[in-house]
Length: 402
Image 1 (cartoon, rainbow, N blue to C red):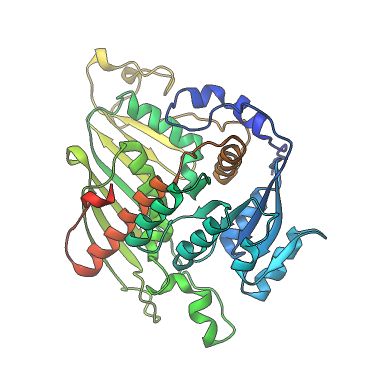
Image 2 (image 1 turned 180 degrees about the vertical axis):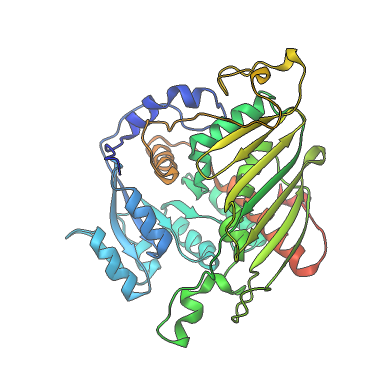
């Protein structure tokens, strides 16, 4: 494992100038002022994701966790390993959010809790970083946009793939037209796991394994595929017009009611079809996104991206600066790996860069790249897909969603 150097906000931006210059859509501009005051954070939810967020922030200068909240005493005990003598611990999130010394909150609670916690944070004038999916249903998503827009608070949603240079490079390729006319996108997020966590008693089942029950969770679409839905929305610069879907509890016959397999098809502008698949009993190729165009295909893996050209005319062959080669040099069907690098040259979790955007926006009164509207759009697409599966009917993007 490499030893990573602590990263400041200034270092992040100065080190990423060339990368970010190619993406005018990226809202990570240079910092006008370097402010010495740390952003004081509270975290709600010290489960797997909450603990993961804290662990990747150890090298970030400019933030301080001053409070942790979880209603599970065992998890709160784990959180104490990351605190100090001044850190406060709470089992009631409302009491934590009432603390004046907290500037911002990270919400990593189960999905069904997001909306009420966000409203309470807004009430207490806290900047908000909420994990995906933003809300439990469409009505909450629309309502939360209105509430956030009444304030000057920074509101960011945890779609961290927007902060991964691999996707910046993909966006650059698409914007320059090297794939030609895009017609189809195939995404999959597969695992071979029952998604269960051990419980000490039956009373804990729905508390610990909340992802398995529709009462609390949006299942595979909300917990896994939301990342890829966000990427596709960003890449295409639009929201899906309609969606159909299928799913079921067909393998893990253990009392759950969220689907253990799903396949949905979104239609975007210009007839682009985006298929999203997730199964929980096979992890072959695990995570992937394929973008198919008339001139070529991008095959995106977890940490790699490959370009497969279609047969093209010679005058369309130059792709210097993207693949470092010409299309004539790559035979149809032959893969060319696309090179990319992180903004600061370190191999960091994209969550680090997402949080740096959050800090930047708080310090300089800016809007984050993945703001409440972007979060709303993904949440609506997620819940449209689940409704399509549940009802067996095609779901349409309504005018009031935009």
